[in-house]
Image: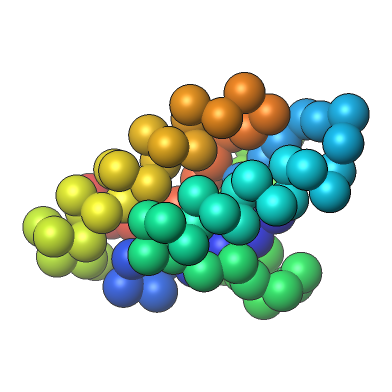
Length: 93
């Protein structure tokens, strides 16, 4: 799944589920609640490349301290959702 996070960060969300519709719905709700947006397929993935089975950002984006806090909150909510296995953002920390 692809999303835009705080300050336009690109985010890849990997999930394993037995019910795709439920998982997509739940992830969309988490994104909305945290001020992030669902992205159409292909609109974010171009900013990443897969190396040794893991997604790596092609470039990293600087964000404000407030944006970092918002991203941290978003990633915590996604991590708490059992179907989500991994998240990668193109943020420069």
